[in-house]
Length: 422
Image (tube, rainbow, N blue to C red; front, side, top):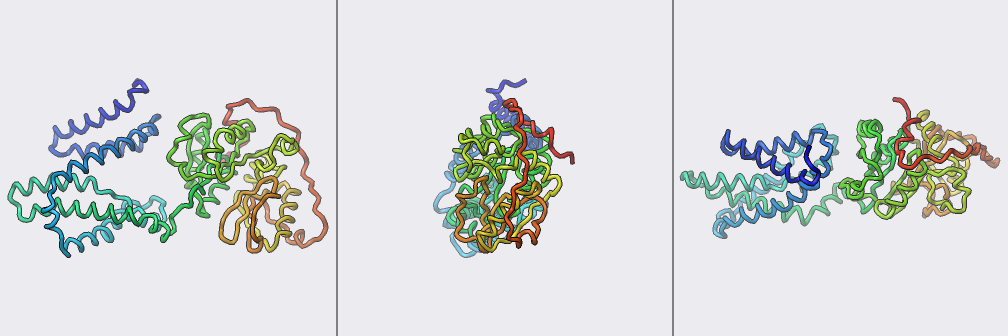
């Protein structure tokens, strides 16, 4: 067993050992060996893979910076003037606009990435450090062997690397906006709990262009979320590593949808300043809604929809529905109808600009310029059109459930007991 504090050191030593050992069997094969080693480790279920990932990212920045300095130190200005002509410019254009996109699209085949996402990776992804290293090595060897024009290899490669870095770095933001992959700051949503209802909500958000991440300590829920193509993290909310997870950098909304009230409260208390800068919400019970100590705008969806009802509706109606709205009066009537029917739960308000506003239990503070052209996004059975046209007042007939016993803190998988069995 490797001590935790020696994990990074041992991993680095193992990589160097594989490099040296491979080089002993076949000259210059060390680079290929460590690349294959990285691919194998990345696809293994290692318990500390995230810690190794953080270490790798820090080490990569340091080593790549040093390597570029060392390699470029071997190039003189006169070497760069050798490739200062139209032929080099044509080669640069072919590499950037033809060869590199072809390589990215072939590599990303079957990855689930959209066309514009592959296009963006083609524009900014490859950095060229491997090409620069190999070009320097082979360029020097070929030149020493007297191969004609071998002196052009190294400056050509560095010209392409330098050109792509300057071009991509200055235009990445603009290019992302042009092809529609630019994420507005902190528009992502993290959902605590990956139950069936959470997965349905997450899938709808993903289809509407929002980055959504589900967090749950239940491996079965996480596996089902990933089967739907959702980003999902198997992690406890009590874990310190969740705060620095690289997948949550663009998150600005927090939704706690577990079946444990204590966990939902703890999630908001701990993460609302990190992940909920634009809004943090949790499921609350009807009893909490009546409690003056519970902020009404912290509750999700409605004061009468708790986790049990949300799960039952998700099981009976496993998809999200949209209802056109022509006025504020129509919206308020839809909300009243939903609160009078156990099988309808309002989730979002979709504006004309396709912006999604999370509906709180208290809708009095909902800020919308105009309800005309908006859509009510809900989970459950379709609305009855005749009931919408009826002028009779809607009577809220949902029974108020008896208060549940207080759950034991840190039982993060309580909701799995009533989770759907798919």
